[in-house]
Length: 368
Ligand code: SAH
Ligand code: AVI
Image (cartoon, rainbow, N blue to C red; front, side):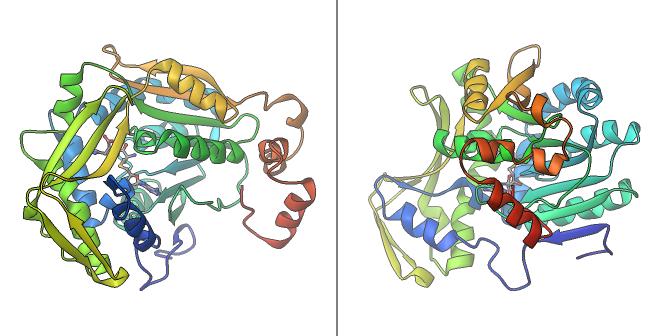
């Protein structure tokens, strides 16, 4: 806890590894062929700073494009949803989120903001800045992996859940489906989900965004090796790798790789692993999926969500979708939102009514 009850960071007690599953993920990724690493490990303190620099690069259009769309639609979507709580996955520095918080605050509705991020540095920055910018706002920062079950503190009134920046594209399609189903379980009738997705476009523009002339994306990519060096006692020599980013048409995604300049061995002391790399062998460090409107609509539908608004910029570079629970209204409209939010879990057979009641009785923080 940082400054009294209004502002809290929950989820990590001092001394515990910043990335609890790093060891098993690194072992799994570097012992398979072709080798890969999960992109969530870019964001230590340095990686988070480098990502902020990426967002300012002339070639990296997603951040400023999404900001321009949000500037236009923040008011109407807040008017439609009337949220009291804003829950955000992977906020980073939450710069764009201010547009939504301001629109909610302007209507006198704003009560709680729940940012969920693996990066403690980003969360602390948010707490410091938003704590003074919004004096009546309760902020519950959750340090953790949104691909694992997340406990959201109970709240009253409507929720707006947001996932911006196109970060969903960093998940595989299977992971994205699992994630979206967990989002659906957080929603009750009247709650809304706002999702940012980068769109399919001219390949040259896509590839430029991930091969910037200042070399910031290359430094960001290489930083994942420093994270492994620092947290798992590895001896990756960053100079022995080259940044590679290209568009994979078949998979509709940018791929980032680190390519070994020479054949060499790397020792990862804490997991007792020696990794052998051939000259030219690559480790895939990130996918960044690019979507069309119909791909987004289908992905939402698979999770039980219905697209109710689709917004893009003039050039169709980036898309923001606003969705709601499919058929989540009628029978649940007059019961408390806490119970109504359990509807998808009940429907999909993931919970029995008894399980849910037990959860309410035992835990002050029911898991949805
Ligand atoms: N939404 C912001 C930041 C995007 S960068 C924007 O639009 O600019 C991606 C953010 O997601 C980083 O802050 C990173 O730490 C976080 N992140 C990535 N994978 C995550 C995971 N599995 N669990 C929690 N946070 C994650
Ligand atoms: C966070 N995420 C949406 C970024 C992207 O574009 O996929 C991460 C990134 N990787 C390289 N540049 C930016």
